[in-house]
Structures are given as C-alpha cells and as structure tokens.
Length: 183
Image (tube, rainbow, N blue to C red; front, side):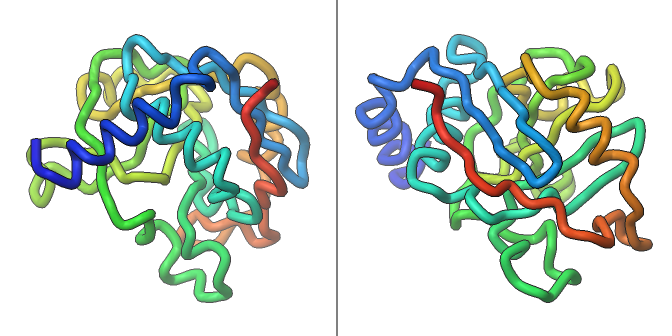
C-alpha cells in the first residue's frame, strides 16, 4: 500500500465512522435512487463514496454513460463541463484498491476502472460508479461491487431508455441534482 492509499484509508476510516451503515440517496432529474452500501465487503470503497457524497462531490454531476440492458454510469467531474468528449475520463485524482468479491446482479453498484492492460491491480476509479441494469456475471471478479439499489431501480431503468449519442452519452443530460447520506 503506498503512502497516498494508506493516508486515504486512514482518513476514510476516521471520517466515515459515524456514517457507516447509512444508505446514500441520489436525487436525479428523473427520480430518486437509494443505495445500500456494502460496508463489510468493500469498506474502503463504501467509505470513500459516503465521504464524496457528504462533501457534495456528486451534486450536479451527470449519469454520463447509458448502455441499455447493461449499466448506467456517473460520477465523472468532467460531466460538469460542456465537453462531452471528456466524459468518462475524470475522477478525484486518486484510485482505490480493488475490493472484488461481490457478484454483478441487477441493481448492483460498482466502481468503474481502467482496463487490465494499464491497470493489472484492478484499482477502481475514485469516483465513477455504475448501476447494473441486469445480472452481469461476465463482470464478476473484475470490478469492485460496493452496494445495491434498494429503491429506485425503476428510475435507473427509465434513464437507460433515454436517447443517447454514438458514445452512449445521453442526448439530454441526466443530472444527480443532490446526493446525500440518509440520516
């Protein structure tokens, strides 16, 4: 574990103690999605997600990638800019250790990452996440699953049906208006 990863893990552990076990709510312009985080299976990823949520990181970001029957993806800070060609390339400036083990089921929430050729350790992006629209066993063992949608899969399904461009970016933006940790 390098110094940055160790410092991040320690700060997440300290900052996240009072939030453990609480669900995350994503209010979008298409409805609300509630996510239960897997604190035991993916503790570093779960606490990182809660911390970013509590800091307002996800507010006004977009679900920038839609692949019907597969996933909807969000969490890229580049989606705040009008340059759609950079969507999917951003993050908070760090990656997270792989916490691979949970299956990709409908409603599973996982972390995006760069491919194995440039990322053989399968480290996760620090902020970009996806919601599985169906069971995706072909992804098992390759990505960190850190939660599941407990309410709002109908919202994710609605988003997945929106018109999109050749890069799977929605034609009309799908915003995370506000993200917060359930009280």
